[in-house]
Image (cartoon, rainbow, N blue to C red):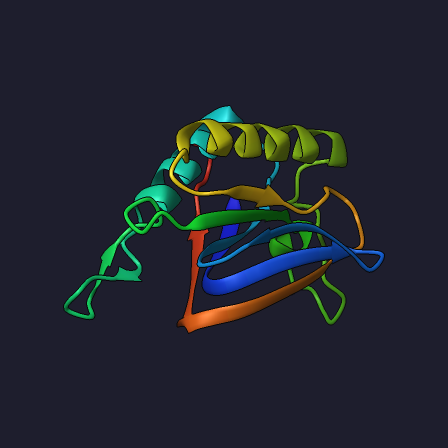
Length: 151
């Protein structure tokens, strides 16, 4: 699974002019399931992003996790993270999981996040929808994170 994590002061997802998910401070999590991914990769990814120390402590050092600061998670599906641009100017998305498997793993990740992240809100976009993502990046801090299936 591929993600891009953005530490945000606030973020929201709009669909057709209506806000469907929003958080205050926390993490915007753009996520893509790749071929071969399973619940195992989703679990690893979730464990890592919830413990990743990218929020400031009292000394101004990145030493706190999203759970430590009781921040929110806004989890948004984004299959374009699997883009392969090595073969020309038009990206290929063949590494992305097929839509049914991608949605299944996305839904699984969201449900697990709701169970495990009980100190802050968990919000989402809508899988496969045309979404407008609004955010105020804090820092800015943007971190790519990939969990690959075992070979």
